[in-house]
Structures are given as C-alpha cells and as structure tokens.
Length: 386
Image 1 (cartoon, rainbow, N blue to C red):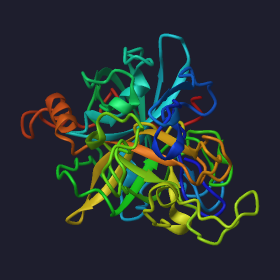
Image 2: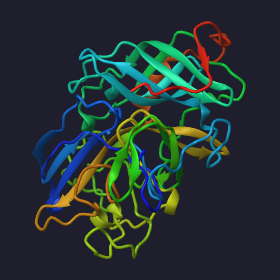
Image 3: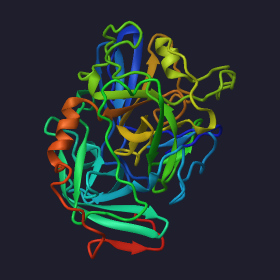
Image 4: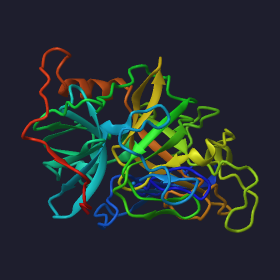
C-alpha cells in the first residue's frame, strides 16, 4: 500500500495503452508484484479506441509514508483484519513474489487474484504458496498446494475473471481469527464506504509506491462505478476496451483536498472521476488509500447489515491522459499509485465470479472444521521473506 502525505493507500498495476473517446490515454496497472523483487510481468503497451493504456499492481495512503499499519487483534474501521494474510510464492522463472489473500469458506480456502499465479496469457506458472497471518499470539503460516484459477481468466485484465481460490493443506481455525463471508448482493457496492487491506508497496499520494511491500496496511475508499468501458454518467461506450464491465468495480485515489497544490503549483483536487467524467467525490481525507504492487488479491470490504463482507479483490490500476493537451488528474504524470489514478477490483457479487468460488468451497456443513495442527507453524514475528 502506498500512503500519501495527506492520507490514503494506493496500488500499482500492470500497464497497457489504447486510444479512446474524449481523446484520453490510459495506463493500466496490475497489482501482484512484490516489493523487493523485480516484476516479471512487464509493462504491456497497446492502442485501441481513443485511449493509450498500460497494465501492472499495491496500496498507498494519503497521510504520509509508513502510516495505516495494522496491529494484530486491533480492529480498524470496524474490521477484524486478522484473516487477511501475506501470500509468498515462486513461479517457473524462479522469482519470489508477493500477493495478498483472505480466509474464506471453513478456513481452508484463500481468496486472491488469478494474475498473481499466471503469465500474461493466463497460463498458470505457480503451483504452491505460503500464507502467513499475523495474530495476537504470533504469526501463523500455512501452505497452499492447490490453486484454482477462474477458467475464463486469460491474462487480459480488460476481459475480467481475475480471481483465484487457494486450498490450504490444513484449515486455519483459531480463536479470534475471522473467516470472511462474500458479498452476494449485486449492485450494493457503489457509493458506500469500503475498507481495503493489503501487503503491497507503500508510500504517499504525491510520489506513489516507494516503500517495500510486506507490511499489512488498511484504509478507506469507495467504488464510484463498475468497469470504465462505459461512461459513468451517460452509459455510452468510452473506448477503454473493457469487455466485462459488470465483473469489476472501479474507484480512484483522491488527494481529498480541493485546494491542495500539485507538484507544479496548480490548484487541483486530483479527483480522477471528476476530472474525466464529472463525478465529484473527494474521498476520505487522511484515510484514503489506493492499491499498489503486492496488494493484488487483497480484499475490499463493505457493510452488509452490520457485517463486513468481501466485495472486491484487488486486480489492476489505470492512468488516463487527455491526449490533446496532456492534462490529467494524476499528480505526477506516472503510473505509480499516486493521487489521481484509478483502481479496479474483481467484483465478487458477479454471478460468474460467485459460482466459480462456490464450486471450489464445500457447502456449509459438508466439511468438518479442523483445528490448527502440525500443518501450521507459529512464530513470534515473521522475518522478511522477500
């Protein structure tokens, strides 16, 4: 997560370039890269419609580097975050990578993003991962030996289906460690406060992700639209090339202050939805966050009748420019999880996403709970893995 000097998280994603209406260019970031390891998922550039785009992926905050760090056993924004863990794994290239994941089902399953475990074409390159949870008693580590990727995931972020379910060797069932429920109400996600959690790169809203990943951070944002393949106001196609708008949820990383000067001394609020679509919302002040590399697969929670449920899975990020004059909501002109960029999550409530997750996890009552045993290790504090 990247933090800004004012407050908020942000994440970095993969990049692709198209041409789109209203003469804007687009940078798309994919979230799933570790902090201290080079990202093997190179920036991809292309063109289409009226946008230029890039794809790549973490969390950044608004109130300064190093903030919004969580403490095991201490709820933040009403969320018991101890069920969100750190995923570490190697792929066929031998590189070590980090993503984020959340406990679901009966505690034997982890919800994450498909792109963490595949190449640019959706071919699986990772077969196992370690999952670490920080608890008040220490760090619990379990191994995931089965990784199920959505069958329609093909490596194209604009095509959606960026979801994976990992099966642990041994279920995690510890007092005080939550197992999260999924949002099953399609359409209740937009315009409400959401809580975002991840282990990605951090920093601040002015410079983006500059601090190594591996620390769990938490903050607020809100979804302002589904996919940007259509204009949020008119509903008309805007040329971003997003094929499955209903499978994703989109938010932006606001600087939160309408009169705060940007790096060039200009009076700008860095509200991406307002700048490009006329939808104004300055966010959550110092608690505003955006995703960055390492946050991929992390969960976004919304309230469902007093229960915080997983509504989104961190997938990728976007940066737009007006190609006629180069103007943008982005504070620094670089796709790096800074203020004025967009973030996109996989939409858990989409039927094709829910049905995939439900196909992996047994119905309630069909699998007995197993308490933590020899398959899990407990440590006082995890040392750096990457």
